[in-house]
Image (cartoon, rainbow, N blue to C red; front, top):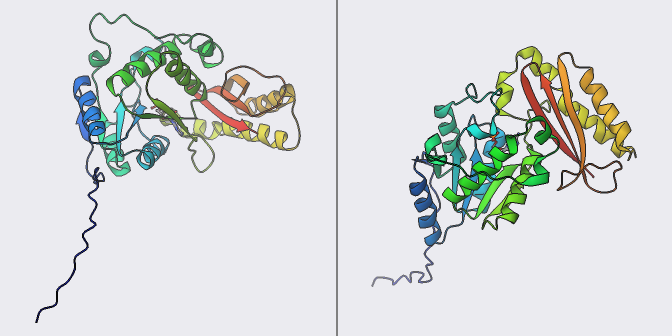
Length: 303
Ligand code: AMP
């Protein structure tokens, strides 16, 4: 007599199959990436989007990791956006290591990668720009007057091309996150912005695609940037609340590094670009400085 084995009947099919590790689908056309996002969403998937200029490092892949944790599908764009560079900046020599980027994206588990030609993002006759007003004016905006117009314009275009549910940005570019939040609010864009922590090298230098430009000697001098922020944080922990002595201490560390030209040391109420004179709440200290030909930025949140 054979035994009758009862099989479990309560089998619930997963609506969205988990993404398998595979090379990300490469997409060049705006219409194709838009369809890919819409198809995923029609199947019930939540789509996360990570816009980048490529030359990927662990800072970028931390955004992909976060997007993978929070979303069902992840799309990354690699696009060196010409309009956010001024004519004297590094657009032409900006690194474009495509094969390495694709390997990193596969390892990070991105599902799709958008690789648009410049003409796909700036079609013939392109004439529209996005200006976010006062949040683009100080600090980075003062040093790079056309930069945030380029950033705001390309981010708006990319959000049009990639109608994702969430987009992931790094806190490393603090003012950029303020600009992006402003334009999403003002233009009523249906996307949620997620800001992720800065990823650093073991010695404290914030990861950046531009670190590749530094000579070994400049790489050493560059440590003055994160160290100036650490000095500020220590003084705040010890009770200092006045901005002027904090700024002076940061500048002293920056000036002590040979070949370092500080641009600004800014103290802003967190979530804004407004300068404070006294720390009364969460405050961001941000530094920009030039080491040789390379401009570095970094920031830290002070309690
Ligand atoms: P980029 O390719 O430099 O335009 O950067 C693309 C995204 O990665 C932006 O949202 C940056 O803020 C973010 N990002 C760049 N460097 C880091 C880092 N070290 N840690 C976290 N996010 C970063």
